[in-house]
Image 1 (cartoon, rainbow, N blue to C red):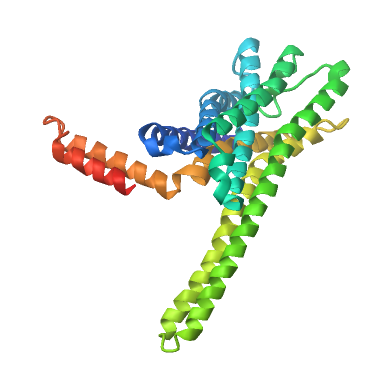
Image 2 (image 1 turned 180 degrees about the vertical axis):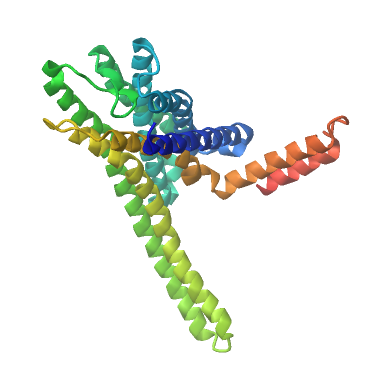
Length: 339
């Protein structure tokens, strides 16, 4: 193996471990916390983590074996099943991110009517469409035998070697990526830029009130005034950073692979082996980053994880006495109320 292949294998192995642990944590938090289960965005987050977890368990190891062995790791039937699942799960994950952005847009732009516009059953219907949409293209590709092992990406994916099928496969690939990646990217940009516009408007209003207050407080200490001005700046930057992470992570992780797949369709165009695998690994890295971007760094998930860790430590400290006393129950109840 060359050094580049070893580095790519190590990177994919790290992504696999991080993705497995982080997505499991999101699902554990959702199962453990009744408050998280009641929230509408939880439907989208669970679907996203479920897709990422299946992608991690089923597809990442096969691609890792493809890199290490330099050839197809499984038989044709298993390969077609893995290619079908990867196409379905990746498309479903993209649409889940788009659904999360729509939920955020409604919550920020239409806060008073959010409860009526985004109900639990509406979220379930959106996820139903996401599944139906994501299943359509893999089923068609499987029926037309357009799922094969591609040595360029060291994985089972949308691919065909038949020259007579090139035109139909090209049209199919363009439509597929336009209805998954481009559609999701358009929704992300539209909704989050609207959210950013509203956030900046509210920041300006708060800044005006703050400046008026500082003018009235003539005896205020200069250090306090400086802290207020610094907080204004951080508040303006916070919303921009969050939106940049949501859209930027989507583009950085998916765009190189999608562009490579489209360039590959051009006549006499050959994709570099190492670049093909690197772009594939980038798409997998989105599964590892999603739990942190959307869930685990939020205060509510941190509290649930701390509560779980607290209970685990108590059980480890008192393994034989069955430390589920009335005092422990009371403490758990108080902590749940504070969350």
